[in-house]
Image 1: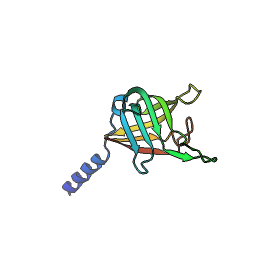
Image 2: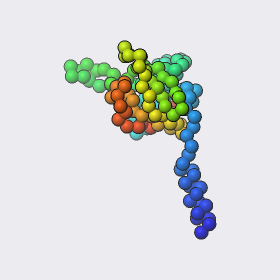
Image 3: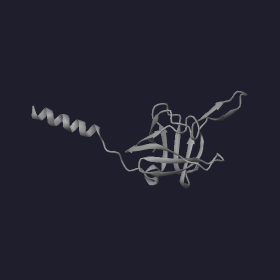
Image 4: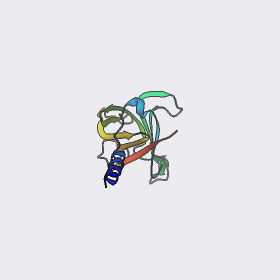
Length: 136
């Protein structure tokens, strides 16, 4: 009986893995959304892989608009960001607004969970939480 209880405790503690610290250094690199693999977030690097501190690039792919033009999906673009605890403050660099908005963020190893600030466009309420995996 004790061995079963001990085994249950070990399994529960393993399942409740603690979050890792979130900082610009731990975020640096490319992260892709885990299920659909269509949204990519690149922290602190530009499209060539060169360092770009405190910048976040969101690539959501392209779609055709009403006139048939192929354009980046809403939410794609360049953002400046700051991390404070378990919140990420983002500001769209394509907007004339200087306001930032904050969203929940959490990291466990190579998994990043973030409120989906990019799906509906900047400064909209998040529609869901997305899990991303770090690309090698």
